[in-house]
Structure formats: C-alpha cells, structure tokens
Image 1 (cartoon, rainbow, N blue to C red):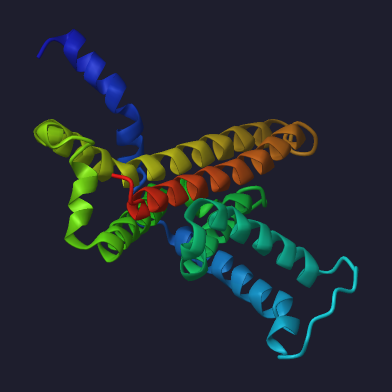
Image 2 (spheres, helix red, strand yellow):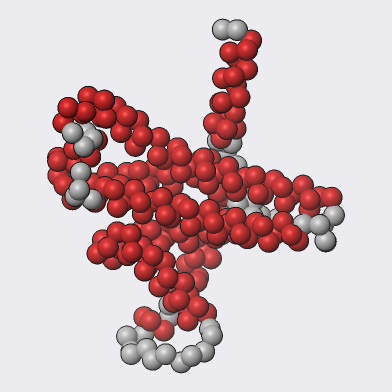
Length: 238
C-alpha cells in the first residue's frame, strides 16, 4: 500500500479508531452511571408519589416537581405515540428510559467533577445494540418470518441486490447511533473542559449553554432515530 493510500485510510478510520480507543476500564464510569441511575430512581419515587397513591388526581395549577415531570413524560410519550402509534404504550418503558437515561448522562458533563458516561463508546454502543435487538424482535413479532421481506426491496427481481444493501444498512445502525452520540458529547465536553481550564469563572459560561443545548438535541436525535427504526420494523407497506 502506498503512503498516500495509507493516509487516506487513516483519515477515514480516525472516528472509529478514536471510539475504539475509548473502550477501557474507567473506574469513574461505573460511579457516574450509578449516580445517573440513582437520580432517575429518586426522581421517579419523589415525583411519582402522588400518582401511586391510588386516589383521583386533580390539577392544582401549581408548579411543582410532580407537575413538571408529568408534563415532560407526557410530552415524550405523545411524541413516541405520534411515530409508532398504539405500540407506544408497550414500548414507552424502553423508549422513555432510554431518553431520560441519555439526557441525564449528557447533562452530567456540565457538572464540575463529573464526566458524562455518554462520552464513552462502550456505553453508547450498548445503547445502540439494545435498539438494534429490539427493532428486529418487533419486526419478527409483528410480521413473523415475512419480516425478511423488509430486506428484499420493492420488487422481487431486485432482491439479489437489495438484500445485502439492506443487511449492511441494518448492521451499521447500532454503530451509527453509538458514534453520533459518543462523538457529539465527547466533543462538547472537551471544548468545555479546555475553556474551563483557561478561565474557570467566566469563559466557560457560553459553552455551558451550548452544552445544555447539545445534551437535549443529542437525546432527541437518539430517540427520534430509535422510533424511526421501530416504525420501519412495524410497517406493513413493504
């Protein structure tokens, strides 16, 4: 291989190599993930207390943790329902958990002393693989063995060409989800850390706002793509 060819390949492989290099045992990663899980559990227990009482809940118009949480969860649910219809009820435990887990992990990077677990490829690839497995479980559950037709294209005489293309496309999905989330959160966290090191009290403030924006956007993108994959697996129009 020529030096020019090696350079080209190295340039293309850089994002994947950087992701693979991040797969290591991080002693802080487990603590950060446990902290995120604890935050979500406490939030569910505190905010959901009145909904578990078994009594009729009347709107009070007050802005409290329960009402804010209800509004956010309801918004995520209606967004999910808009894309996958009646399946939203049975899948919301998964899609909602993914959305809030990713969001809290992303936001953790804005807290001094914490690293966002989503800037670790070994975390994001697991999330991507969960979506990948559930997508095809839904497909076979809904269509049976006829789900294979989703890989064959619109006409039978194109199946020989479409099947390998569709197969590669599906196999790349978890990697695409993982790299997108990993790359954006890593980049945002590194930029914030650099400016925090230069001038801790003033300079990082605009980048904290940018980090907040990126955290929500990347959560939305991951959830949106997850729901699109679910919708495609459930569709009957192939």
